[in-house]
Image 1 (cartoon, rainbow, N blue to C red):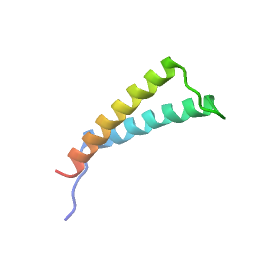
Image 2: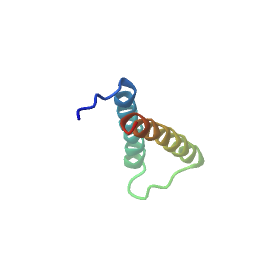
Image 3: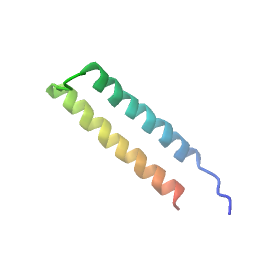
Image 4: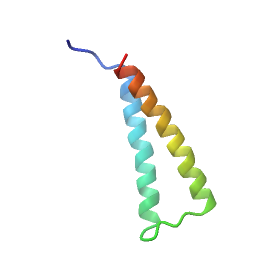
Length: 64
């Protein structure tokens, strides 16, 4: 059985990649010790929360 992928799922995948790229940039900018200040930690928390929402959307769309 072939299943089409929803536009929402595709958008969620791309948004997830953008969020991961933000985290990657932060890690590169804080190398080699990756010590984060409070503002950076808050940004990481926000991006991880957003990433979880996107992954949930991907799961819902692809496994329905």
